Amino acid sequence: MKIAVCGGTGFIGSALTKHWLEVGYEIVIITRRPPERATSGRQPQYVSWGELERDPQRIAGVDAVVNLSGESLNQRWTKNVRLRIMQSRVDSIAALAKAIKQLNKKPEVVIQASAMSFYGTSETETFDESSPHRPTDFPSTVAEQWEAAAEAFQDVRLVKLRISMVLGRDKGAFPLLKLPYLMGFGGRIGSGRQWATWIHITDMVRIVDFCLHDRSISGAVNSSAPNPVTNDDFGRTIASVYHRPHWFPVPAFLIKATLGEMSVMVLEGQKVIPKKLLDHGFQYQFPDLKHALEDLHTN
Image: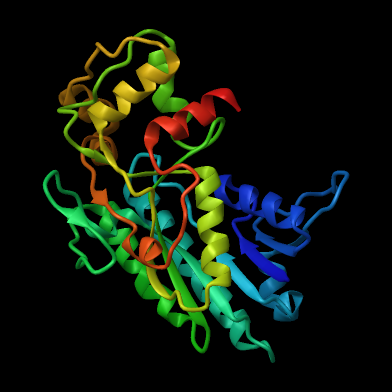
């Protein structure tokens, strides 16, 4: 199988690429800056966005496309940053859709990244793929426009992955979340009642692979574990796994003063259930948080 991965050098993309290379797939990574030299072992091909624009045949013969491209939300949302965040998502989709349109043989499926922020935030509601979009802040607006742009992919099966907080040992949000506990100052953030919907990086890779191969899956798919927890419970689980105290709460006003508008990503959340994956029989390797964190701690 031949797969094009846009954003294949990022956290999720690199884990996907590693897995698919190990099972013998041919991988083409579309990225802004292809590496100058290849390392040893089985390697992907690299294509820059400029090369793809000039010659869409660089991805001829791909069976699937996974688009994870998009500038990080983890920066202060100035006017220019907001524009870059939005454009990085919309422009990558437009460029990719244009290239695919020019191929004689279209890929069978496009798996397009989105985010669980699509649903907006709530301490009381539970969201699944049938829940309506409710823009409450900048991240939810980004997700809305991200998914709207993805409708440019025509004549292919389209999967929109609404990705939750992905937990990895050395990358993603988890190294920062566990750091206060390792220093002995862990505790709830704000009220601690806000929901934390999460997924282990191993299951994130398995979800993408599952959506790739199950032709009955299309549309929105919540990429999350089936057991979200509150921020307070998330912290208590870190403390338990790492044998550290959970006692030092960080007040909301301090987070707001430090992060500004971006504090919504820490102080608010959403309880998201992966109903479509469960209905299709996906089996989680790490369905509960303690099991997931124990794996990250020991492996």
